[in-house]
Amino acid sequence: MKHDNVTPYNNKNSKKEQVALMFDNISGRYDLLNSILSFGTHKGWRKKCVKMLGVNRPATILDVATGTADFAIECAKLNPTKIIGIDISEGMMKIGREKIKKLKLDKLITLEQGNAETLVYGDNSFDAIVVGFGVRNFENLQKGLSNLFRILKPGGQIVILEFSYPTNPIIKAGYSFYFSYITPVVGKIFSKDQRAYSYLMESVKAFPNNSNFVTILNETGFKHTGYKGLSLGVAAIYYGQK
Ligand SMILES: C[S@@+](CC[C@H](N)C(=O)[O-])C[C@H]1O[C@@H](n2cnc3c(N)ncnc32)[C@H](O)[C@@H]1O
Figure 1 (cartoon, rainbow, N blue to C red):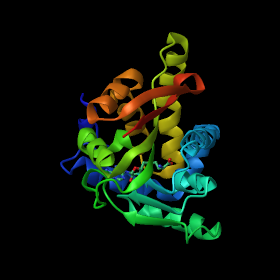
Figure 2 (figure 1 turned 90 degrees about the vertical axis):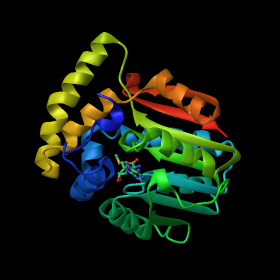
Figure 3 (figure 1 turned 180 degrees about the horizontal axis):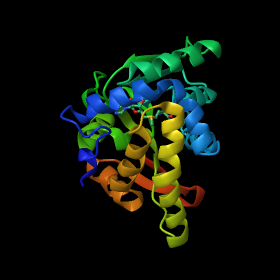
Figure 4 (figure 1 turned 30 degrees about the vertical axis):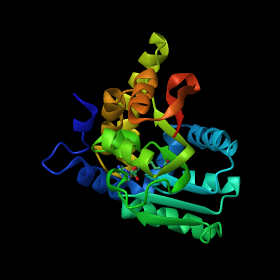
């Protein structure tokens, strides 16, 4: 099945509506489940991405699909002048805003309701863009990426963190078992959303990964693109420049 057609609840609502509802449903447990299911590794993955961005000292950063704002908060370490996080799920951003306030970062980071595919920002607006586990959930990947390209300043950097699919057959088998049997059960117990963590595996499997995703970045217009596998290939950092 084409990745755009893999949806959380397989009903007649648009993928965007289903994804927003799913994240609203699981928002209260999202951070906890992230830490349990990834054994805490997700934090190190974001750190690596931000380190890569730091080389260019971006002043303005957009965190697309910010969710509970972990990526935006990590970006604060680069001392930029402005960070904006956007998301289609108010539930996720509510948790994010609480974290930002607690950390006294509310003057630097603002979270706004927004869809990556219909961004309101002008052309060439941001020095850097980050997306953490978001592109897989876009309704129209190409439209989303084209919009990100449009609002990035020439020379600006994009860094995308996403789950991948290991190529080593043994690791692939373990990964598939873990995501197919363990993740949905743990996800269901903690989040009470039966579909959310089954959708995770289905969407990861259907999504173009590694060099396939780099090709899409190239087709969108990004240059100096590439990817770096993380934790035996279970995730990847994709990067590019406008
Ligand atoms: C798995 S969470 C990732 C949150 C956060 N970036 C992180 O690293 O933990 C995916 C987020 O993408 C958001 N999302 C999905 N499609 C989106 C879109 N088209 N525009 C903006 N946000 C979107 C969801 O609402 C959800 O909060």
